[in-house]
Image 1 (cartoon, rainbow, N blue to C red):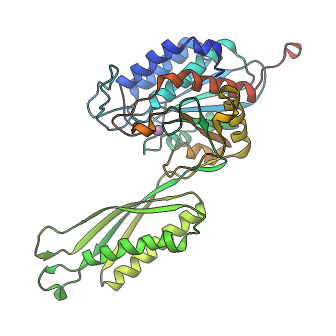
Image 2: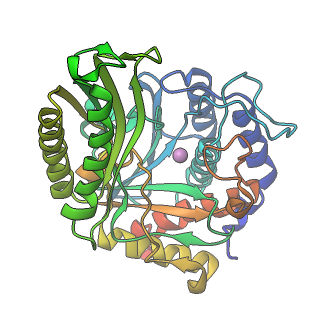
Image 3: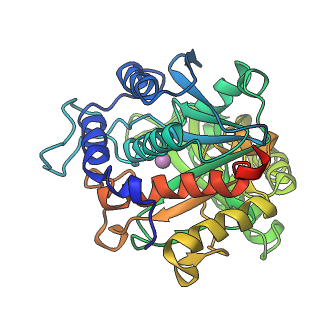
Length: 395
Ligand code: NI
């Protein structure tokens, strides 16, 4: 492995930062101490400008290279999850019910490590924007930063993201051109019938039987209407109705999630979900109301940036450990909002542990500190490749 030498020497220090962040997790938009930690570190490294309070707790560091050149955004997420940690590690969460179970503590640390190195070396040209975003876990911190003028205040041409990946061994990278993570939407369906005695169902209109038919009907949208080569998921994840053994209730509520990669598939499923629901509700003499909420869009990587990421990763770990056509994932990621506006790439960095169940969002998960230096080196080499400093003769 060819990590940046100076970053290799920061291993111990980066591990200490990571474990400090791990022990003090903060949830979406509450990353006050984390943001303060990040901002203080950036200032101590000599980063040229440090902007705080973007989307409540977001931080952007501005680092200027030698001479004019491209403008690049590198993004790390800072938030934790509402999970009770069960790792029993010495650096376990000190906050009951909150935990860094997705490795955002590691992501923040790696970007800090890269910032420190690049602030010293200035081994690049142009302008580098170090984006530390809040609220990745379901609360769209990336979108909030964009809405607060991220790309106007810090005009960048491309954006790059990185996420640890327990299903890949440490020392390997995965990425793909096009959709890498899915769009994630959710729906709430209320079926209203007429309650009655459970022994005399003909006197009412049963929303539970309608709900049962609806679950089946919704499954036929993916199996019969989406191209089998395309990918989509509809899952009904909650059904609530009734309070007694002998009463047909008057209403039933269904919740669920929809995952898609293509915008046209997303549109088609939303439309058909409404139509199928209305049709089945009518068939069972009930009425339906559908609330369909669009969440994160699909995370779509652009070709040029993916090939650059793959080349940089290959330089670090060797081409055989870089999976440039890694299968996509049905999970969602709010870096998608940045990729909707700027070309860029979102890569997965292996850290192992997946086979043993230490997957993201598990109470047994922990970021693997052994990959900190590799991740920070990836950022440094990516910047140096994209924005090489002017050669001595040009200065
Ligand atoms: Ni995550």
